[in-house]
Amino acid sequence: SPIHNFLAELPKCEHHLHLEGCLSPALLFQLAAKNNIALPSPEQDAAYQSPATLAKRYEYFENLEDFLQCYYRGIAVLVTEQDFEMLAWEYFTTARRDGVRHAEVFFDPQSHTDRGVAFETVVAGFNAARSRAEKELGVTSCLIMCFLRHLPVSSAAQTMQTAIEGGYFEESRGGDHDGGQQQQQQQRAIAGLGLDSSEVGFRPELFVEQYRKGQELGLHRTAHGGEEGDPTYISGALDTLHVERIDHGIRLTEDAELLQRVVKEGVLLTVCPLSNLCLQAVKSIDQVPIRTFLKAGVKFSINSDDPAYFRGYILNNYCAVQEAFDLSRDEWRIIVENSIHGSWIQEKRKAELL
Ligand code: ADE
Ligand code: ZN
Image (tube, rainbow, N blue to C red; front, side, top):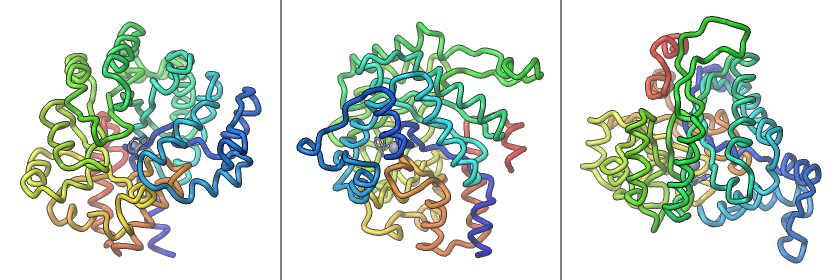
């Protein structure tokens, strides 16, 4: 249909995407076989018999915690640098098909280092896919390192230390890999900090020291908030972590004063409609506060979160919103412009996308 083509062709920026959330049942089984990783036996968990039974399992999650159990279990099959490259390449090729031109992607280093996989293995694999995506697909990207909020703060501190000592936050001339092509953009291996995993009971304030250090180093900052947690998880992240964005943020509608503050400060929410539906944060897509945000002038982007688990990549999310809200083309242009302006890229790149 014409509106579907219009949505497909919009120059999209994705801001809320967990690379580990792109691990499809097919790739999970493929990597488990290659790396000799034992999957749960039928007695332990009947879902792990085949890619088809696992896909069936992903059709229903009770809540965030129920999903996270599957998510962390799947991660065990990722071992070598090539595994991480393959995973990220699967994301970039699929996202490009959906019209993504720029992606700011999350990864969870602690979910790998806790299993004995080196930080460098993870980042090297992801960065190999990122350079290839820029060169072959024209998709630019940055990497956002997330802390797992259910783990002790000392583990986040250690992760921060590893990244600092490894020079992952240092600026270096980008583009050297593509044959001396002049490129002035200062690139860091890791551009920003994020905060994810179980929300309720794991308050943003716990991570104030890591974010303070990140701000001092000139890193961008975002945090999940207001997905399952009440609006104080959003205000807490703004007040104490000095985040530039809030990931999800749908419960912002419960606090009118905070909503006005978010508008005034131009904070971008990275909304994930299909994720909210799959994790029972909303009963149907029309309960995602898209109209409320548009009317109030809250800036937001539309994203896929964990596409291998939540029924599709970014275009499925755009289409689900269109079906539920019947937005005008001008409304879509506002959403896409806000997501370009809210990206952590130079003005020159923004101008190319607009
Ligand atoms: N990790 C991966 N996806 C997540 C989500 N939607 N919320 C919190 N942590 C996550
Ligand atoms: Zn997320």
